Image (cartoon, rainbow, N blue to C red; front, side):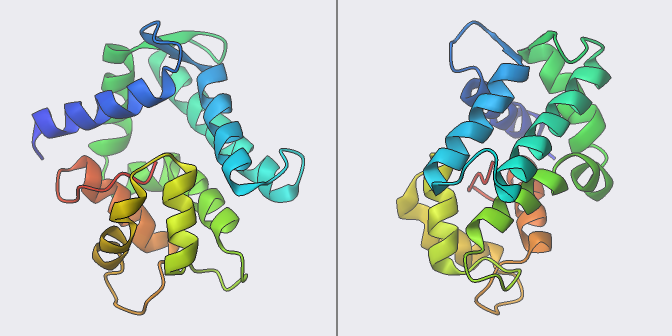
Amino acid sequence: MSTSVQEKRLRRRFDMWDKNGDGTIDRSDWAGEAKRILLAFGESESSPKGRNLTDAYLGMWEYVAGEAGVGSDGALGFDEFKGVAADKVLERGQAGFDQVLRPTISAIADLCDTDGDGQVSPPEFRRWIHAIGSDESTADTAFKLIDTDGDGQLSVEELIVAVHRYHSGELEFSLL
């Protein structure tokens, strides 16, 4: 894994959370992102899907903050965030992604899954890309690269692998 690619991608992720540009991220930044995604999907924060997404995002925050030793009401600078993300998530491979990111990826997939089949279709995926604020023009290409079994649907497993591949520099499309 290229450390420079990993660091650039972690910096991009950090900057997306740091909406006020103060150089730190805190619980409100993670809650704010969950709210923005719910708004993009037209989903209420109080709905089961809304609560699931918010809980998943705040669960990620609690984990990162706890590992950094700042507590849930603290704040992290980039170096602290990078250290936790690299050591406790990325370097642990699938186990790190499963523990920390699976709940959030599953919650977003559940929001996208409008037909209830447990998979994300191309139109549902385009909605995902729009909701997270990524470049929608890349959605179809990204979908094809992420759909490793070629069934025309994305499973939560394929989406988790895609996030891992993104952070390891193998894929150019960010899903979170």
